[in-house]
Length: 401
Image 1 (cartoon, rainbow, N blue to C red):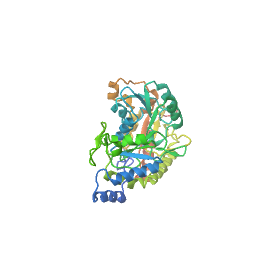
Image 2: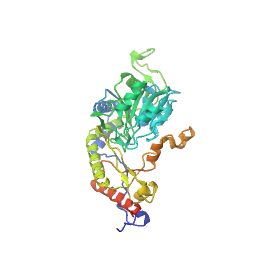
Image 3: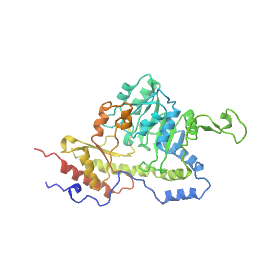
Image 4: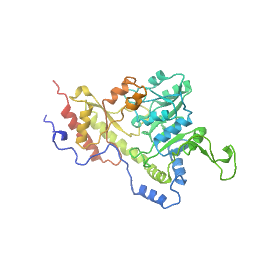
């Protein structure tokens, strides 16, 4: 069989225009929603923020939702509300963006990394159990790529050890676990509204919870620790009076952002439907390639498919992941890698986290590539990705005897 010449070797790329791995989908309704706010009385926190929070809570099946300036701020607030402080340990996964661990450090806590499952790439309940000490205060499981973690097992561990669960669902808005929406189950759940996520507010995040005490702490934390409710003031000098009762932050979302979020939320289910459609095409066309492993979805879970990650079987290839990645990029396919294990980052290495503490995560990291997946894509774009993957794998495939 004659192999096509790769673009990186002077051949013609599969497509002329670069296809990113993710991108927002903004329409005229979104633009008009923002313009309406710009013409109104409130630009910062106002009525649109309250409406957006109510809509998110309703969608996720939670009693409360508190919005924040970004997902990292939301995680920080959740750690505060959970009472994380100096000396506390919090178990999380290394297979995530650094924010999932940094939020623990912000509160003076210590991130403890549990290893991942070799098939789902989600945090392993068995590894969580092995990492628990008398200093453990909470667990931050990450619904990696949109695939829900094994919540029953993790909740059992948390209950037995009196631990708080803060779900990092930055990837999982709209996902379900045993027919329950993610965001309605754990003590607190964070969603992100970064442009590559399911819906966007430009930058933004939210915590959902069913706990009124957590809700009150979250609201106060995002506004400098300020309390205005007369019934909760230590003193009251008049109707203008407010108190800063603890050191909080300015982590508020604006009405401009909330208006965009509300408009986007009305299209969320259709966005997820498109993602699932493209995932089905990827699975059908790529599952026959022995050089890669397609994503696995557990029974009784329904991923919202933020990311589509393939795993390379490097034993069947004459190269490593880096060469495959570079070759696909030169074909104008915007592949990515999610993620560099957090404990391998230079900052965490300086804190004493060493290579080898999560061998499964480290092995998976060396073999994964994220393919483009977002609603703005067309089926033709998906076909280009598949064609490029086949082209590159064919070039680097180990010849059979």
